[in-house]
Image (cartoon, rainbow, N blue to C red; front, top):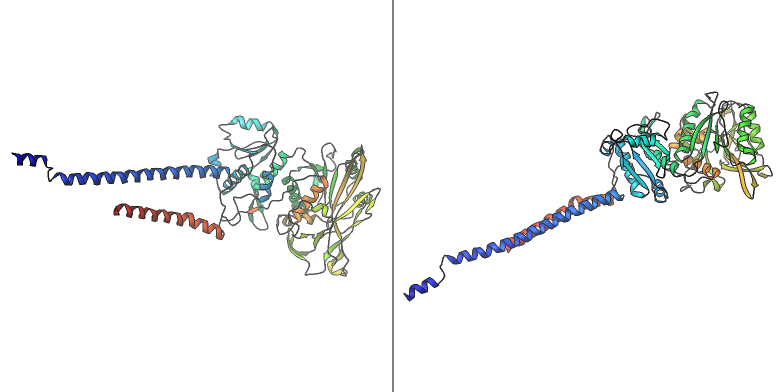
Length: 517
């Protein structure tokens, strides 16, 4: 009996493995719970990091554009202007955001650029509005717009004043170059131009005296150059309009600057009187004129007489480079040519330029004589000068007939001014004279290898007292290719390969340690 009780009190042999199994189960559950917890934490961290990175990418310019021509980036000039912006500006896109971003490479470029604008300035407010579901947005801006607003239009407006606005049309985002048979993206130029305009409290109003009784006054070869020069002014915040010399009105109340672009024939005395009255402005001055002479012109005695009273004379010669080593091989709208490179004679007109080392070329320029430097009648200044190795070729004659003896430095761009004190404040008007429309040649102004575009707009800004000079190069639309730097390649290797491999190795080590335990 005692033995039976002993046996009953002793643990059964079959119970021992059960206890061992229970301990192993507990151990497994313990490690399983820890693993599950770690997994949940890692997933939560990954989700949180993903959300934070998404927000940071939206807020700050952290995306890397790996295309070889930076198709989706904005220039440093625009970035700097945005950083200094002190006025709130609305960018309103008349299209649903998803539709706009997925409607082709051009729309994608614009979308990315608009995001960059927002990322570089808290003053930029970007809104997408589908005009079919938001007709009130269209009505709001249509009241101040002379044209017709359409889907895809980008409205840039002063946040405090909707009436101060510019509309960037989708068609204006692309430019076709017939010579190169290529399309270029000019979206940044147009968007930044609109931004410059709406943030300028007093934009300078320009009258381009391009027609006489409805017909162009210039040679057809000058048409592209004038269009490009006008675009350059518009892109820098000038308000540019075309005025007819005979049927229009050049009122000092309406305009601050006039442009007389290379008239082939002389202008009538009444037209000259209108220009002179504009500059004089009833004795208060503060008006300016840009005059392009050209190798295509016939005799212009009326224009010449007006210029002589201001102290300048445009000669009937062409300044050609006699030193082949000094000549620049340039692609012009009319073809390829070897042309003189010129230097800046008055540094006042280059103030504000970021880079003055690039050459400025002067194709087929007529030299300008300064009849005086400083008198009671005014001040004349040489702005651009050739080298002293140029020779002169008489207009209308073959260059083979020219005497190629070096003629010394020639002025091909000059400014003449008249100033006077009114109530202890200095007022003045100026005429900027350029020896050829080719200084603003269409192909040259687009070529970032030359400083013509930057210098011309800077010189006009100096003459008119306007700041903020931006010249933005267009981007040729080609099949996008990826071009990455060594540092970018290393970064990609880290994110694409190194980090995943490290995670895999850590996982293997953790699994191995668990099995050993």
